[in-house]
Length: 598
Ligand code: FYN
Ligand code: ADP
Image (cartoon, rainbow, N blue to C red):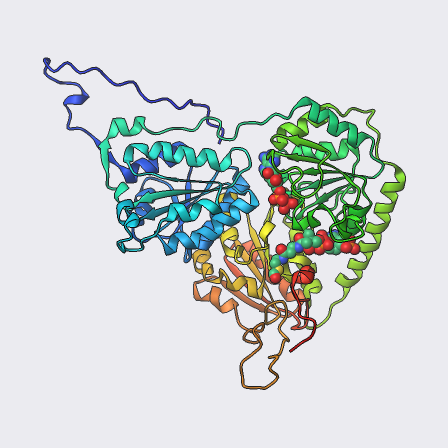
């Protein structure tokens, strides 16, 4: 949001009661209302799209917003609208707006708001709500709920507006809270009575605020930068880890320059893939479990030492026991001053926005910078070569029925041929295999389950990527994951979006060959299996999109190429072996298992 105009209320015009009024004041006073003040406040701050679902008390608001030129994308479930808003925030650095009805609609949107906050995606959940006085007396209003209190623990900030003249401040506060510092989710509570409230149009306009510099640069301390560079320069086995914070920061050229000027190998976290092309010679993604324990100095750029990085300790990092530290020295580049030391000691915290931090680091790196020892680089490339060869062997096989590798080998080629397409990805095996098999070439193009490993983001993320990104979207879905948001294929068709959904259908959660542990055949299937060979493609056809049922890589390739050529809403039901995959993909160890089966 780069608008330069400063926030300033217009000065009041003095009135002389004696002289007959000919100026505007003589005109019947123009009025505005809560509906229009909200719409004007959003437009004034560059918001051009709302993701939501009409209903009491916001139906007219959706109509009036569309009439005022905002794009209103209407979903079949608020959770999906919320996910769409959150990923729009990740892609654009502008808060995505999700609009819901009260109580259950608000609660449906809340999951997405909490997920946005957990992932540091800027989003504003705007929900209509009940009147305060009734809620506080718990008098049983329609959809009565104290939404503000419920939202607070799950988001970065929450505000309620009771008076029309405060809508401008409410929207400004919400925007600034969502994108400043560590981005996150914000809740804006708008009681139903607010919308029809009226006020003088001029006073209304003057009450609106165009937020100036909502995400101010945060320049790191020069000592912090020097400390980090000294530590990195002295490393024998340096490693850079790029997280989705680095992708969000849109400092792509500087981040690439930092990696290439230092010659330090880097590991991209899932949503940072493509910041540098995954085929880059310095990528250590294919030697992950070698570089993490072996590195001596690790620079984290927009990546947290959370569960995805085994909290910086334990076997993953060469620790003897799950809690033992591996002895690495950590440099953490992050805008959040409290992130450092959240799991293990950070030896050189660099607090600031990544753009400012990386350019400050680059300023301290010249041609005399010592490239990493050949011994370290050779060891990494040896491990990479081995893993890449192993994967190439598996990808070359052409089993029937298909498995994850033979199907994803096609997706890998399609993404290579369409590097600016968005790849939305969820599931367990469908997620983990796609992450390592499908290389990304552009930043912010891989959109996946993120920090929470949440299922259900598929269609919401796909719709938002198509709407705000304007590019082709390829959604690689596990058949279970797809079920969480599948009904939104109607929304994809209604807006005729270039979304190609590929369901890797193995007939169940994780796999489709589980049996009922009770052993008797009373007909109840295992809780993990679905209807066999379900025809998901018929769902897309039901709404006028293209459906395809494929069983071979060749069929999958043809139907994906047709989908991308036509940019038509398409769902490809790719049948893969029921036994393909493992429970929970690559995080089976997170499942508490009883010592023995019942
Ligand atoms: C990676 N690898 C490769 C490549 N890329 N080999 C060859 N070629 C390429 N391009 C190797 C990599 O070195 C690893 O091998 C292995 O493939 C897996 O790499 P990955 O996936 O990056 O790493 P890993 O060990 O799985 O990382 C752990 C993790 C990850 C937890 C960060 O699994 C993850 O992000 N999981 C998300 C899980 C989730 O949220 N699921 C949704 C909920 S499931 P080695 O180095 O030999 O080990 C609900 O039930
Ligand atoms: P990943 O899951 O890819 O490892 P995380 O979501 O764990 O990444 O970490 C993202 C980190 O990036 C968060 O700690 C967040 O504070 C930080 N971050 C997000 N945006 C910026 C930015 N513009 N500048 C600096 N840090 C940022």
